[in-house]
Image (cartoon, rainbow, N blue to C red):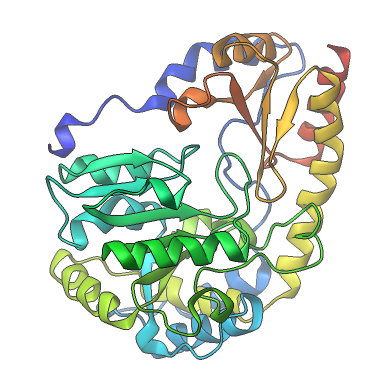
Length: 368
């Protein structure tokens, strides 16, 4: 299979519902795609501006300052001490990393790539791109021989599910038994809402209490798009097993996958400043506190969603019917059909809208 064989981009199917929602007298409230709406922090923008004299090619491996900042951030914010620059590799956003990891690891036909049952579709795209077999499973006991890559996503997109330490340990143990790489997509880890994640850090797959201090076979992917409003910067990184990262680095050098030098400087600033992350989380918390009861008042049941940027909800009917009903009051959500075959009656509401639009959505939902 090649890129030309990929199916049509799924979000194109939402266009008629978006058009209906835009016809609302007070305009559309777009809660479909989780693209940040708040300003890039000043400390980050200033660092980018100061680094614009970038006349030389950047290094694929990243600057020493960036790799050291990532390692320090993992120790400070994620409970993962002891990482060195050799444990870190930057990427051009996390989506290209998710899509290309099977290719960069040398996977192909006959190999199995496991991904969550409720899943961001790019996990499956990456598997199909190299002819591997995607398998939707959250149960490590189901992972078969021939599995070469396991994706877990905690907190999950779209469902906001958090993997606790015991589940992470079981996943790492099973992946090692199979000789598979375990890649943990942790991009929403700073956004915990419900107990216990409102007061304690969400576990990383690289944490010593998961790996016993041995990162062999384990990777963690992270993006600054969510916590720092840097989606437009394409600022992300991978950390973990240095032997695997060395292989990935060689492949990425051949493909020219280099993160621009000014972006790397901006990432150092973002990773070194916790204040803006706290402020952004407070904004999302306020929006969630307003939107969640309104979604429930409109007849939806919210599942999981204890962390992350979304509310994963169902009213017991096909997601396209729910989307049409919501579009009738000017709200656009994401259909569960986009996140695998297991949740055809769920929709995803994003928290990434302005305070004014979230308030408008809440008012409209209560009217239902």
